[in-house]
Length: 179
Image (cartoon, rainbow, N blue to C red):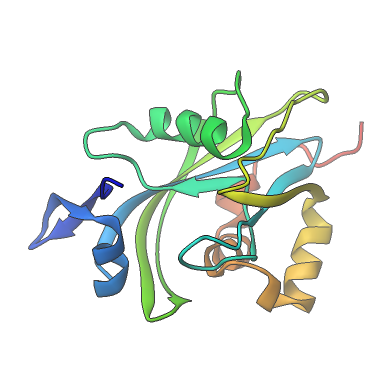
């Protein structure tokens, strides 16, 4: 298996660094997160148990690291297809968020994340890759916030950060009315 090189800041400049090393050292690095929405509901995923950090926890629709030289928007579309089999959506960049969080096993996410949002049609086909995702569900935004508050250990650190600190920037223009 080839090691994935991702863009990380080393001595103030972006450099390609192996993904596991980035998390072991807590290096600041680029990332992409996508929220797929439908009428106020968010498609969330439960991470596969084989993931090297935060296995079995619920996260936003998908998140990843761009390949070295890959644009953030291309990365977002690529990962929707690779993780969830979703095609035909072209997410819009909504915000840039920097956070640092421990994710277990001595690993640290220190990410500068480009957050994307896409509105999905009612008939969106979702076919999760079992190596990446063990389960998906559509959840009302307000129900998700309430469940994260009640059961925080069921959710990834970054999803909690997004909801607690960046909801207005991510979801501010979304229509949460029931149609």
